[in-house]
Image 1 (cartoon, chains in turn yellow, green):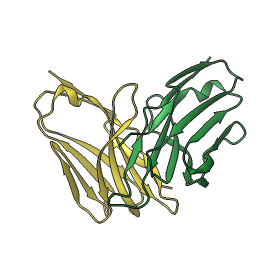
Image 2: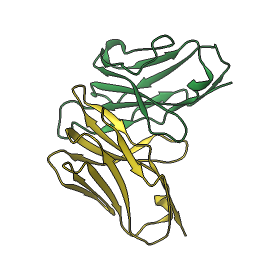
Image 3: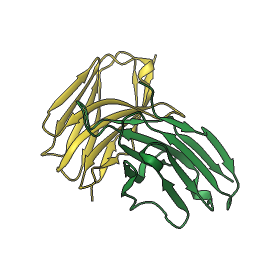
Image 4: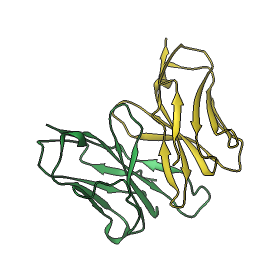
Amino acid sequence: KQEVTQIPAALSVPEGENLVLNCSFTDSAIYNLQWFRQDPGKGLTSLLLIQSSQREQTSGRLNASLDKSSGRSTLYIAASQPGDSATYLCAVRAGGAQKLVFGQGTRLTINP
Amino acid sequence: EAGVAQSPRYKIIEKRQSVAFWCNPISGHATLYWYQQILGQGPKLLIQFQNNGVVDDSQLPKDRFSAERLKGVDSTLKIQPAKLEDSAVYLCASRRVRGPVTGELFFGEGSRLTVL
């Protein structure tokens, strides 16, 4: 059974810092991994999708990496801004039905 | 393109009452998902449709939850009777099956249910 873990559960950093969010998964047989952002009371917004054959994806100040063999992904946020404050979730697609399994998320706070 | 639409956004009911949530996926998206997200947790898959057929409903509490996707477009999720532990946000998501980016999931704003 695929399990996804995100550590830490919460992170608070000053504005302007570069930071890394971590995601680990137990079964390396995945189709892809997706990072989402969730603002309070809102749905999930897709940030980056990494296919199993890829090592990383970049979008603006965001860079996501994937190491299938070690079961890890990281989301790197450069030059953090208060507007980046949100909960960040990673999810892996695996299994015959290509089920998307989520981690519990990291709640990020960027302090001005 | 228009996003995933869900309604109602908020619903408050008493335990043992029934409730229904509606989802309209992005046009052309064959796969539709319903997730349950309890406060402080990641979303948990309840049911996955491919067109109007069920692909995975292994985590759907079938004694009280039901879902359908008529004509392979809109979907409805029903809870009857509701329990206190059903208080959560119910998220609908859709995914294009064929095309340049077939894996990406798009979510609606969610329907927040409070059971008193």
